[in-house]
Length: 248
Image (tube, rainbow, N blue to C red; front, side, top):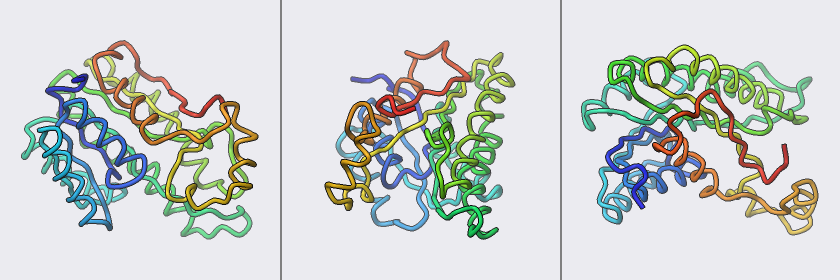
């Protein structure tokens, strides 16, 4: 398939987990992909090389901290210089620093808000003008159902992900007249390295709360991002697509 052929995508936090699944699916659908990493340089470059060889697309990894306003500006500038355009932005960078609110430090709060929410502002801010000039673009913000439901011990994470919903709707209204769409994806419990380490009893406890009785996969989240990045969703904007097995 080639739903994204001819498009260039920038994905933050793309070297592992859901981010890597999005990068891989985008390349599979024919998009040229630029993606960021912070610590796993060897892994990121290996993924870029693999995708370029396997799918014949242009793929490059960039070391960049999405929570840093200046670094986000330099990233967009570098990607535009190398690829010539950015059609799709996927704001995926995110972390957790879980703790009960009464025990949560200011640092734990700030780290999560800056990485999960400020980063979305940073990249969207710097990519807006090129997209406005092109009168086209799709911005996809990766949130979480925790932003809808809340979760004990994750007040910082829930606040950051809930903030993405309001930001997404506002940006969709601000720049929709110029042909730019902005949507959010809210994953539920997704298979990761962390869930793989859980014992079967713990997994069953999670499954009991999920109507579909299983974790989702990174590919299933990535498929939603393919839809929102492609021309299949040209009249979809300001929306949140939950990928959660009916949990929310």
